[in-house]
Each structure stands twice: as C-alpha cells, then as structure tokens.
Image (cartoon, rainbow, N blue to C red; front, side, top):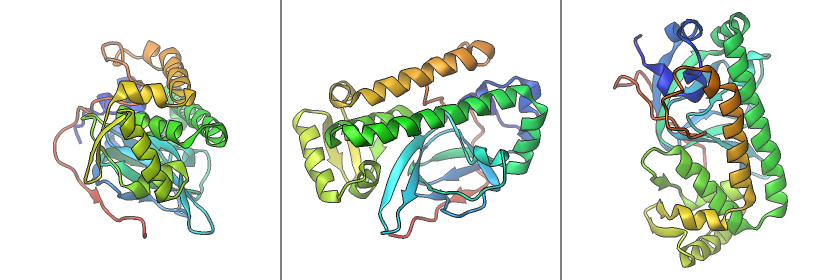
Length: 271
C-alpha cells in the first residue's frame, strides 16, 4: 500500500525510512466523520490510530452520566499507543470534534516495531510525555481559571489542529470541553462575541478571531504549546531530515496521502 505517510503525522514524520518500513505494510487508511467514535470506554485497545488530519477529544464519562473532555489530539499524536506497553482497556471515549483521516495499525504490530526500533521508542515515549504534560496542566487549569479563559483556550487548540480554520462545535461539545452546563456555554459565548473573539456562529460553525481569543485565553494555552514545541524541536525536528523543510506547528501537519479511503467510522456517542 503506497502511502506518503511521513508528512501527515508528526510522529511518523520523525522516522527514517528504515524505521517507517516496520509499520507501513500494516497501515490501513481510514476516514472518520465529525462526532464519530473511535474508542469507547472499556474497549480493548487492539488498534492504534496515527492521525493525519482532524481533531479527536478524549472524554471521561462520569457515573452520573456527565461527559467531560480531558485532552485533544490532532496530527501530532496516535490514539491507543499506550496499549503497546501492556494489554489494556480504554478508560475514556475518543470521539471526533472535526472529521479527518488516520492510519490504523494493529497494536501488536506497533509493539513489535517498538521493540525493534530505537527511533520508534523515542518518538512514542515523547508522545506519552506530551500527553502527560497536557493532562497535568488541564487539572490545574480547570481548578483555577475562569470559564471564558478556558473556552478561549479550547477554541484556539481546535483552531490550531484544523487545516481550514473552520471550527464545527455544538454547544453540547463545548459543555464537554468545559465541564459546565449548556446555559453556562451560552453565557460564555456571548461574552466572547462581545469582545470579538467569536465573530459569528452559523449552524454550529464558529468563526473566530485568533488575536482577540489569545488575549482572553488563560496562560495554559501558550505555556503548553511552547513546551511541546520545545520538546519536539529537541527530540523530533532536529533529528529528522523530513522535518527540516516544514513550517513548524506543534499540532498541525498537512497530510500528503493518496486520495480515497478504505474504511469509514461513523457511529456516535449515545446522547
């Protein structure tokens, strides 16, 4: 299966051809729609998804039925990669906030490649560390920062990960991101519209003004972004000839893949 995978996912882009060849024969290209569910709570993690485009949210389902987002992931990451360390069940739901494309590989194949290649071990360990960094920061952010600052941060994080800058989010999805009621989302969006951070909202499509959102967003947005950029610069970009000519963004690489998909994921989370 001839795919130009190296330029679509930041982890894969950091691998030399010999390392990538351990995985490429086992990749299956697939698409997923907005609001598609890739992983459900309790699923055995048998597949790993290297994102080429789109935005996924990791959602924690509480016993009372509330669903709250923990982190986002785009083409900088791989869903289910932790399963290579030991067989495990997913503690979260992974659902799409923006449609995209991924390369799916069996977890057992990735585990074998992980054992064979020092480069694959290096990029995946970095990936695990960046996820931990985001989770630690998220816990502190949710405890101390106002809801309008956190909404601005989430909108910027999504905007970073979508190639066309178009954010398609329902109020329910925003409530999941913020861990608040939809009435709070309505009030908060009104505040961001008043300052010009949200320019318009049409049928769930948000047009935002980045500069104004950045002035409102809590410090977490820039702190995490810069720390991840520094980690990638030191451990990925410096060591890979594939990365040297790319315009840097810690969360977005434009996918260079052949057209057409072999699978489509579309089921949604029960509401």
